[in-house]
Each structure stands twice: as C-alpha cells, then as structure tokens.
Length: 240
Image (cartoon, rainbow, N blue to C red):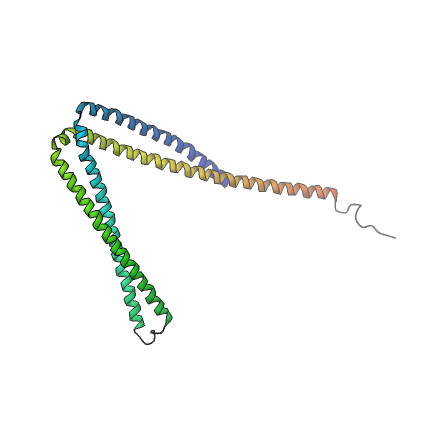
C-alpha cells in the first residue's frame, strides 16, 4: 500500500511538473521571440551607432568577468594564507611537544612534526601560486577597466545614442536567464519524480513477484497434501 502511494504521488508530480515545464518553455520561447523582434526594431531605428558602440559594451562585459575572476583569486589567496598559518602553527605545536625529554624520542611526535612540515611546504606552494595568480588577474582586470575608460571617451556619442538598445538587450538577457533557470529547475524536478516513480514501480513489481511466489508455494503444498493425505492407506500397515 505504501509503495502504491509513492507510485501515485510520483506520477502526480510528473504530470504536474511536465505541465509546468511546458508552460515555462513556452514563456521562454515567447520572451526570446519578443526580444528578437524588439531589438531588431531598435536596430533599424538607431542604425550604425549600435555597431560602433558595441566594442564598449563588450569591453564592459570583459571587465566585469575580469573583476569576478580577481575576486575568486583573492579568495583563493586568502584561503591559502590561512592554511599556511595553520600549518605553521601545527609545526610549532609539534616542536614544542618534542622539546621535552620525554617526547623527544616518541615516534608519534616525530610523525606529527613530519606531517606538519609537509603541510607547511604544501601550503607555502599554494600560497605562492595563488599570489601569482591573483597578481596576474589583477593586472588583466586593470587593463580591462582601462580599455573601458578609453572606449568610453572615444565612443561617447555612439554610446549615448545606442544606450536604449543595449539597456533593452540587458533587460531581455536577464529575463531569459531567469526563465532558463526556471526551466532547468523544472527539468530537474521532473527527472527526480520519474526516478522516484521508477523505484516505486520496481518495488511494486518485486512485491507482486513475492506474492505470486508465496501463492505458488501454497498451491504446491495443498497439491502435495491432497496427493499424500494424513492417515492415507499408503501409510504403514499392521502385520499379523
């Protein structure tokens, strides 16, 4: 009964999820079509200033990506510094422990010191590597921001004239991203529901097979009992 309820619940989730998924996909396609139509209209209205201003907006996109990469590199460097400090603290503790005559020859303390020393070396390598990476992406970020400033000055008029087009495009891109995320979420939910349905169905099939097997065994026992009833004439007889 419980597995049957699971099966019905999963089936209901699949039906409901697929309906929502179809609706979400339709909304996504509608927004995509609407965005293409309106952007083409803006393109015809504003003309060549859009193409002339495009390098500026591309540079802004690259600068934003470079900034995000710089932030990730900074976090990596901070973690590496923390790991290095923690490893050095472990070495200090191990050295302090081995400083006493009692522990100087203790293999446990020696192993702890060796382990801590390895961790310091590994953390030092990671710290240096992450520091170099942070410096590299910081230079790229600065160069990208400088390029944005340069293009902003040289394309000031085209940027101003084309702003309605690129602002509209950004709005549509955001809406499309939100709806795409919704579609992906619903697809995942439907897949999970189908998996639960499949598991419940297999469990029901197994239960059904077990019931049939027990029923078959009972039939065999009854048949055997009829063929060899208790106290039948075929049993032991008195000899006088």
